[in-house]
Every structure is written in structure tokens, then in C-alpha cells.
Length: 118
Length: 175
Length: 85
Image (cartoon, rainbow over all chains, first blue to last red; front, side, top):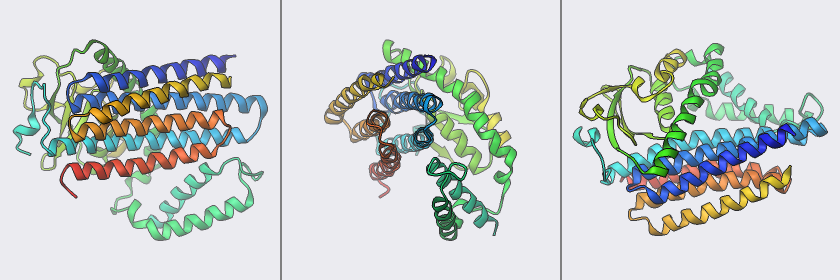
């Protein structure tokens, strides 16, 4: 019973943040601000939908003691770690590439990187 | 020899996590254990120079390895949750003051800078764009610069976070 | 318990469709790369949930490999955009 509420809450948080990330992808004015909404908020949302799967696996294992569900939970943990680590590096690479290819932040109050001449 | 053993243990750990629940010796079957040891020996022989490139084995200290999950679950996760709510607010209302600022952290080692840059990038609202390799300063795109901060040349790293100073935690772990 | 997961996958697929609008519209190549990265993240989340719905653990292994391969492809797109390739 508690597990069902936990799964519902985790799935709800995940879906809400994924939706907000995709709305921000359409709403924000330039590529850097879109990156804030799109890549970070969807990483957070996807981590929470995966937490729902981990909670489901744990609750079902306690209910049935079938070792298949331990496998499910551990593999999901590995997938979450891979997702979080790789998303940080790839969004940094995209931001750096965008700045190098000459796309400047369109509404911006200050740009120290351009002033540093790189 | 030490890089070989460390790479062997690391790849054996990943193999055991991915094959847990396959049999009845603990959680694993005998054939999976034999295959895991053989494959980890092969991986360690090929890849030992990639995991341990320096001559410095500071990170093999178990206390530092235990501090990493504590750091991720504790202060870092709180910071990510607060920043996500902040970005959600900005998506709905559209009030942004974006810009690229220069942040000085005081960390010196490559691993420390790597961990700080990754923590900053995973926190919504801040992206590490580039690094000045002579002074180890980070260039960070911030979605909402505080009024008054755009005049300062260099901003200390603790001003980026609301609850705890993540740079101090990383210095404790990696330096 | 399992019937909670199906509507979540449906919403995720709708969100992937919305990202494809930005992939089509995006004024600069960097916008397209960002929306492609978002599509990859959402696909991994949808694959993990589908693994529970169909009771196939292989789906989660596929999700791990998909996350790592999409990381490599995003890095190469970024290198190409930055003029380093």
C-alpha cells in the first residue's frame, strides 16, 4: 500500500519535471537557456521515473522473494548512474561547442568568456 | 601492479552488479563467477593504463570512496532539488537574467575540478561552458544572475549554491 | 500496481513528439543537437518503464547501452559543431 503511493509520487514528480523541461525547450529564447530547461530538468525527471521502477522492484521482491526483481532493481540503478554521469558531460560539451561556433547568448547581462577573448 | 589490481577489482564489481540474481552461490551462479573473474583479468590487462593514469593513488583510500555516495545523497541532491524547483518557476513565469560569469573555486587537482564542474553542470540553472587553464577558473552560464553580480570580475564558488558549500565538500573528497 | 506505468509511458512518448517539433524548427544547429539530447534522455526513461510493463529485464540492458552510445554520438556532434573534428 505504501509502495503504491511511493510509486505514484515518484512517477508524478518525474512526469511533471519532464513536461516542464520540454515546455522550457519551446519557451526559452536562446540555446543556452533551452539547455538549462531541456537537458537538466529531463535528467531529474528521468531519474525520478527510474526511482519509481526501483521502488516497484523492491516492493515486489519483498512480496514474492523472486530474485528476478533484484536483477531489475540493480540494472535500473546502473542505468540511472549512466544517465546522470553522461548527461552532465554531454551538456557541457554542447554548451562549449555552441560558444565556439559563434552562437552568443542572445539576451545576456554579462559575458565574461567573450571578454576573455576565447 | 597496483593499477592492474585496482582495474581488476573495479571491473569485477561492475560485472557482479550486472549479473546479480543468476544463481545460488550468494546471488551468483558458479559459471557467472568464473566468467566474471576471467573477463575482469582480461579487461585489467588491456585497460590498466586508462583507469590509473597518474602515479598518485590517493583516491584508492576507502574513506574517500565512502564519502562520494554521502556527498551525492546529502548536500548535492538537496542542491539539485532546490535548483530544479527554481528552474521550474522560471519556465512557468519566464523571468530570466542569463549571462556567463567567471567563478573561482580554489581547487587545484584535475579530479577536484572535474567533480566541481560536473556538479555545477548537473545542477539546473548553471552550465560549465569553459575553463581558464592557467588560473583554474570556470566560465559558467547562469540562468538568473543576482542583481549586482554582473559588475564583479570573479565570483567565489560558494555564492552559486544556496544550502552548503559544495567546493569544500569536494576538497575534502578529492584533495 | 503495474497499471500506473502505462499512462506514464504514453505521456513520455507525447513529450518525445513535442521535442521533435523543436528538432524540426530549431533555428541553429546547436538547438537541434540539444533537442536530440533531450529525446535520448526521454527514450532511456521510457525504455526503463517499458521493461517493467513487459516484464523483460533485457529492455533495461538495452537502455544502459542506449544511454552510453547516445553519449558518444552527442560528444561527436558537439566536436563537429565546435570545429574540432
